[in-house]
Picture 1 (cartoon, rainbow, N blue to C red):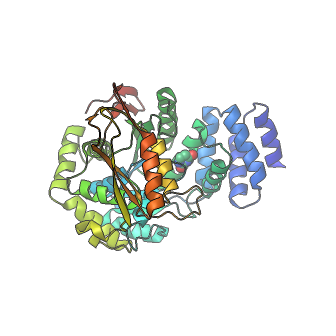
Picture 2: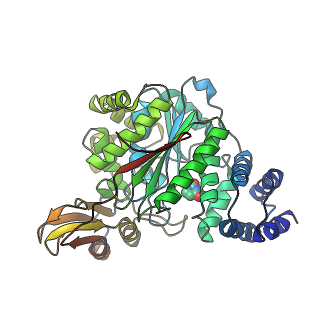
Picture 3: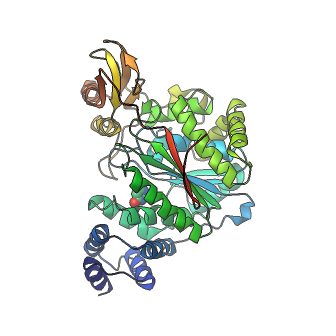
Length: 443
Ligand code: URA
């Protein structure tokens, strides 16, 4: 009866009280509330919205539906990074070992690809043998020895969110600021962090495209963190084009390894260093972002960060040889260069079209239970604003067969727009948001 009453009230624009959210989240996690009732309630929340205090109560309720990691015994700052998702976004693969190599514990709990966006777990699993389904005990042991665990949401962490997020994905109720904020923050707060850095994507390939709504989402999440004693800093970064060049699981791991060796593309390095600097300052390892950047660059130049990634891979059952020899990653059977059909400026490289093209090629998933082929993807060297001549290479297609090459070509033809003029793309990093407000980003 509780669920029916709450659906009715939210449908009519009323509010749900903290005790009611708690009872509902617990009952749902235990299977005492059916999916059809929860789906109806989520749609009512999506359409009617939640007051800030309701968002806080829902976050708390989902957090309390499971366990909270107690990592104080590590005696180190514990900082994670969360991205709202995009195409070519392999920052976590570089950032987690990099920041861990500088003395910060990084309990990185990530998700799978869904829709057109990629997922860190799928990328990691393209490393032969790599296990992302660590138990909490395994994660804790690894945080103690290596300062980093790269894993999925365990059954103990915010189980109500786990079920609700899957249901939202199936019922077109994902794109709601209070539901996104409470979902992400319930999981992050369960990690027992001392600080959190958010990479808020904006632009045509982002979950929320419009800047004002991105800033509002950041503000809600920062407040939720503050309420729980977890300082949160957010950077707004561009997702109107893919990040870096590689899109596709094994190809992105290869690019992340190159980045850990100091050979990553500039945009990937800039976003990684900017987020890493925020993590080191939040951790009190550095006083300001300029000195933090020097530390980060140094950890890459000395090989310390790449070595940490190698040890993490080994600890999680993967083949650490991929760091020295990326050819040990799954390789596509067919490779083809894609060239420009005309001369002109690259006006757009549309991330959603790229992400959907990779799904079509078999490298992504349309349902959580689908298997993705790790070897397929697109490496796009053309950047918005570049001048190109007809016949010039713009990208390389990696596919499992000729049909996949055709799908890749089709996606690239639609995604890469060449025109006589090109509008400037979004600034790579545009805003920094803290509990004190929004400022324009300056490195
Ligand atoms: N990621 C999450 O974990 N939850 C959301 O609602 C959206 C993105």
